[in-house]
Image 1 (spheres, rainbow, N blue to C red):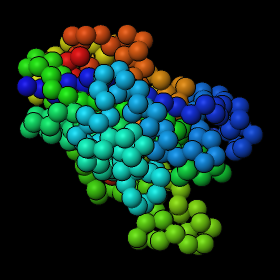
Image 2 (cartoon, helix red, strand yellow):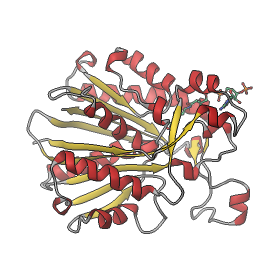
Image 3 (cartoon, rainbow, N blue to C red):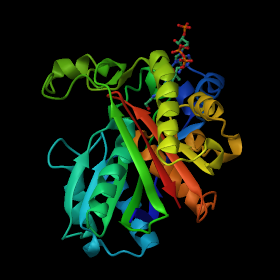
Length: 324
Ligand code: UT7
């Protein structure tokens, strides 16, 4: 039996940061941002709003859609690189806020691939008998963004997405997941300070070592190749032709990356789910955020083949194929 996605949910904070706002903060322009990234605006948390707050909203919506009660969740996996604090896990905070008293809970750290990694782990637990797993991806990227660095600050946004996994049938649900990592290039996308290598200090703060740094151009090329590879892997493992994919939901990093990948895969624009124009790159949250929008707008329909592909820091890359 496959595991099935019983319900989806998402949440974005209400505060909108437009490209025009960014023009007033750094040396950039709406034209550059739209042409080079496809992003027009992104959402930012309100002061005091943290990762678990976004996760709670998304999780409650997913539980409602799945018609599953919080007390019936066995496990909570929360994918994030911007948890409320280093300790305890944000998943435990969420467990309490949801009232999911029976659920085990832990965070998953796989950057932009976090959701697909967590989905894969959840899938394995459901296949081995667990009844309900809540997978949430929630990110407050604004907390690790250097708002004086035009190379990165125009890219990221805050948001959360969630799915509830349960027992499915033989022919539908999660057909496969494929996960990859290559730790040889950690500096492609990283936050160098604030961990045990460079603990939080005035120096770390002064040198902006607690903010995200990215070699955008090099990352771009690897992202296209890796997502293409992961997508093919998903199709091949299931004996499915790329033409049979109904909806392609890639990690929302950059419009040019999404278009290049779908073009290489021979997937028409009508099959590609894009919402990064509204939300920017929300790291792990981007796929479940886009998936929920696709479900609510009925772009994803029962019986369809949905392909998810992600790429991110680590480096990591991953895919999942789902028969809806
Ligand atoms: O989620 C994890 C995965 N992340 C990704 O996959 C991100 C991948 N990378 C990208 O999306 C793109 O590489 C960026 C959007 C980050 C950058 O686009 P690019 O076309 O690769 O630009 P570039 O880095 O090669 O920079 C081109 C020029 C540079 O100026 P010079 O050196 O040619 O004079 C940059 O300084 O654009 C300049 N630039 C900007 N100009 C205006 C960089 N950022 C900005 C900006 N506004 N915000």
